Image (cartoon, rainbow, N blue to C red; front, side):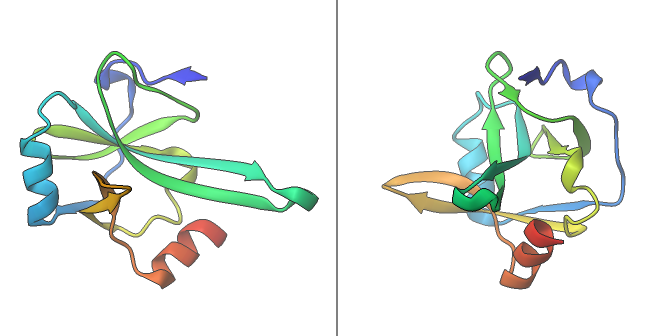
Length: 124
């Protein structure tokens, strides 16, 4: 695994608009320990060799930020850098809405993309 190093290690890429809805802004205010937002990408193989692609939005603490891939900085919101796996640069929508979803009783940040956007992102 590659370590996401200091924020200065990630090159900048322009042209993305990152938008937090009110719930995401509130979540970030109540979780000040998270210093950056990271959009990760992974590909695993299912039975029969079919690739399963996964894009997730994570918040990383400075010490324990380990993910596969090469990351670029695409912007800054709520005093946090936003990093993205470079493998999804071409298929990621230029407008990136972030919201909060509940998963098994826990709240977490999530990308708020339409079905068509998810399709282009994962299967183009």
